[in-house]
Image (cartoon, rainbow, N blue to C red; front, top):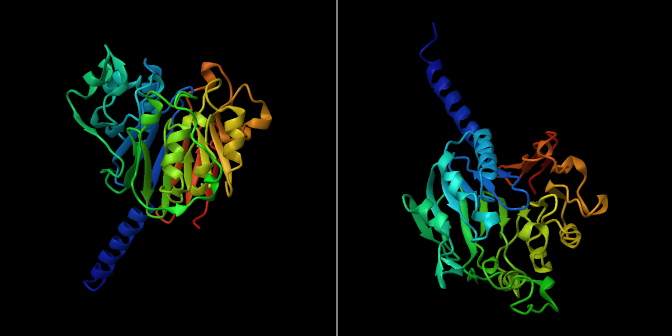
Length: 337
């Protein structure tokens, strides 16, 4: 029979185990294969979920999102951010809501690419959020994912208004003409977020254009330092000013023949202090010299059997994180600094 005096020690042991288990929980980030679109699923240590974009229209990408959600142990999307209204980012919404309930939709406001001559939400998207909560976000807003600090740093063509350190990578750079490389339309409206768990920070700027990135990072870096960077514009265009964020690791959400341009790949690799670049797809046009090592690429072919796999990052509040390739289960851990 257990003595009465041992009972407090038993409770203490249980309490310590509970604290340790809580501390061990991670922020899990799934970079889902949408063949060069975007869909990024984040699951907080609290169990709440944030999905950024839903890939292309049709059933393929929503099914891949659902597979990642199942692997993460979640049955709903608490917050869905649609960064902007292009088909490779919001097309999957119509089918996604048929298989995963969404608690709240967030976006930058009606599309600037007009419908019937007027700014409007795409019909399929408007129908999806009609029966759920919906919010238009602005720079500086917080997305209330329990256990995380999620800050909107860019939305609707505007950057967050806060001080930052002077950025030496801005020197000599000038904005492009507004009609150059997609500086008009929906891309410049992209919602960009920084997600923080303790000392760990993740940056996703979706398809934010060259000029809007200059406005965000120059002459001061208003984002701060980050650990993990999802390459902007699918790895095709990452202006040097983001180098001031000093990412340790980057993930490129490219497809076999969409995004992942050689110039973009080399630009990301030149980021000072970058330890590794992981890719969702092998970029077929580049050859080995402008692709990551195969061990760090989730999908290496163009056939259906070679597609649909994700890159997963699991981050701890001390700033350490592990990245895993779903195709081969190769993992690498980046220690806290």
